[in-house]
Image (cartoon, rainbow, N blue to C red; front, side):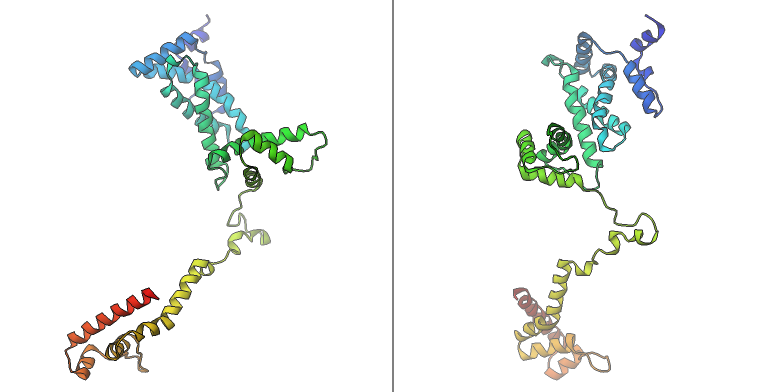
Length: 304
């Protein structure tokens, strides 16, 4: 055994480069020796029984090449392979923590699910600004639709190479194979064929700067805002008139003088003391009548 091989067996951590060079990382993890079934079982047992961190590290390191291999399957989504590997490594560590060596399954088979699950979540979070797949069936379509479309096109000898969308027959085939509804296939195809559009212009060059933010309707024309504005206008007009009709003459005059009357000299209506002198009662009594009248008007408006 040469010195390099001996070092890799004794200290596999030394093979993983500390810097962020992806090619060097991939080269290093491919040199880490694989574990035999016996070694894997021993390390897994040590981790499960004693929480041995070193054993966990050996299990993770020996399967880093698996994460690299899986990450290559998802390069078509335009995301950095380094990020895909990083997320896959998270899935690998979760698998190692949950792995039970007594089940008679090798870690490579068990970890595959966890690695793919983490990569899938990362892609769905970052592939588009707007989520394109939120349900289980949508996720299945998201990760299978493109490859199935390529396969169907290549299988059809008379396929129109310029046609990018599914034919009705192809939609039925995809729906049947993935056990989803045909309309779900069409919806996902539409989502995947679209793209993100920036609300604001990315540059200031003339017409190219005319981004959606320039022609989106302002919030005053938003339906709920218009309904609210219409209701406020009604309250200020017919609503107040109807509410005043439920009051007796004295209460109505007090409310009108105190809240609704505006004189030409901008002095407003009568004060509590002026109304008290007119009706021969105390100012406090006028205030009580005013409060009761406003409460009665409020109930009438709520019932309208």
